[in-house]
Image (cartoon, rainbow, N blue to C red; front, side, top):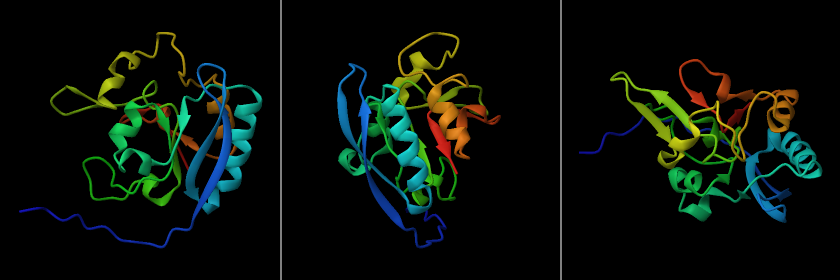
Length: 173
């Protein structure tokens, strides 16, 4: 028998943004972000600045292009915002389900959580080589990074600063 999650549904007004970005090879690409209307202006401004600075973002596609599968999207290093899902291990809707969170270059900035048995939960699972944040590698987000600074200036919180887990790809309002 399937266990049903108690999820309250609230109306969320979404917006579709067309943004330019520079991929890891230095080529200009057109991206699509589906987000909550309340953060659309912030995201337009942030991505305009990132593009102007030639900040590398591998790809920006809606989660629907990955069959609404967050793991598939993250493994492809796809930057995305809206994804209807609950917080891992809970029945609480994620900020992504509200269109209020965005994951940037998620393969290289994985979510890392130490489970009670001491093992690590890494998302995406293929992001393990990028869990050692002392190493230097392409697409890495740090507190000195332009991406980090722009999101913080716009009032977002960074998952890389959380105590219970480190979600280096994640910015939310």
